[in-house]
Image (cartoon, rainbow, N blue to C red; front, side):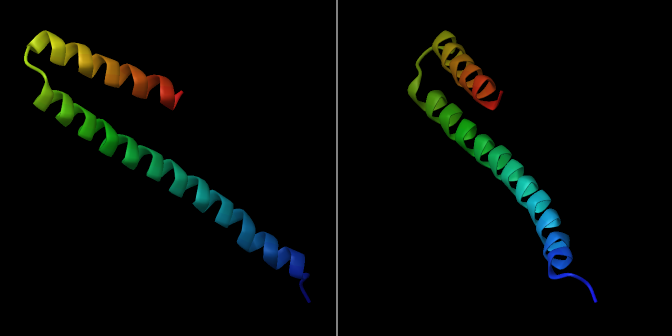
Length: 68
C-alpha cells in the first residue's frame, strides 16, 4: 500500500509547476495590456512626434527595468 505522502507529493509538485507557468503567463499578458494602453494614451495626448517618441521611450524603459 502506498503512503499518503507519496500521493500528496505526486499531486503537489506538478501543481507548483503549473502555478509557476500560470503566473508567468499572467505577467506577460498583463504587461502587454498595460503597455498597449499606455502607448494608446500617449498617442492620443501628444502633439509632436518628438514628444511621442520620448513618452514611448519612457514606457519601454520602465517596462524593461520592471521585468528584470
